Image (cartoon, rainbow, N blue to C red; front, side, top):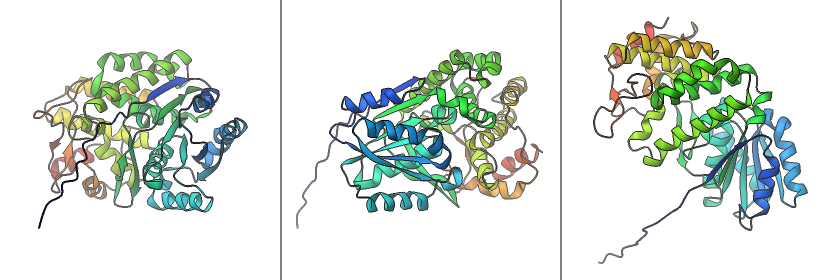
Amino acid sequence: MGIFRVSLIKTVDDSYDIETGWSLTEQLVKDLQNGLMGRRRRFALITDSTVEKLYAEAICRSLQDAGFSGQIFAFPAGEKSKTRETKADIEDRMLQAGYRRDCFVLAVGGGVVSDLAGFLAGTFGRGVPFINYATTLLSAADASVGGKTAVDTPLATNLIGLFYQPKKVYIDISCWNTLPQREISSGLAETIKHACLADRVFFEYLENHMDNIRKVSPEECELIAGRNCEIKYRVVMKDERENGLREVLNLGHTVGRAIETLSGYRLLHGEALSIGLIAQSLLAVRMGYMKQEEADRVKALLKSAGLPVKIPEYIDREALTDMLYTDKKVRNNRLRFVIQKEIGNVVEFRPNVFATEVDRETAREILLAMA
């Protein structure tokens, strides 16, 4: 008998650039021509059925005209498509089209596209590089930093996936002009969340500039795109694999994700998150971490962004309470919440512990109070 040790000490540099601007297709092509993907010349452009016609087809043609080969792999738009089944379908289509390990993935779209395409890139051929070309405010705020890639199942959201970093992210603000106002509002929920957990000055900026932001004013939108990246980076840089601090990014998500699922995705992610932010602020007030007047300011800002602040009547509160237990922060079947501590901060309950247990009855009472 003997022991053979396999030594696998690694030093990995997963750094990448996030470029924010207007109409970035030309820059994407230039970067690829300058070796962003090394010698890889074949791309799989993954997008959804909405973005396909708006942007993906034109981007695909530009890459082909520049000498790259590849095609579009689209799936039906919406959170309902962020599943293992959709991922497997695209993988099978890629294999049938002859794609192998010498390709790269280009995700063009919002958060659903980047989550699913990044997960696929991390497993296809045991890992191929990918680029994220973000076309929505929500993906700019939430999906562009952190490397979280995942799919949903009927029992839980974002629990099947991996951390896999892109080679570059493009945030094309010009795409926001084609977003319905409801999508703009949905993206603002993640922006407001970032301000709530990390930056009081940014929160006040949002209070004072919300009208222009919702009109996609260039100055305001470039600023919020940059601040979203900076805030999330400060968290992810310290905790890439979600071992502690990164949990703060789940502020509002315990209730928000449960509502999103129970709504059958009638609610957009940001709409459900908005309601989740209200729930956690009520809990923060009840626990003595936040003053009522600050909770009122959070509610007012969400409303000014065009977001809902009440649980829809069609969602059963008891079923919602049960659904909370599918949250990824649950430990030993106990609910855990990230709690806001004033505007611009969250509670650190113990060193590097940013979520606390909340009993079922307390959570249920909070939900009932949101009628």
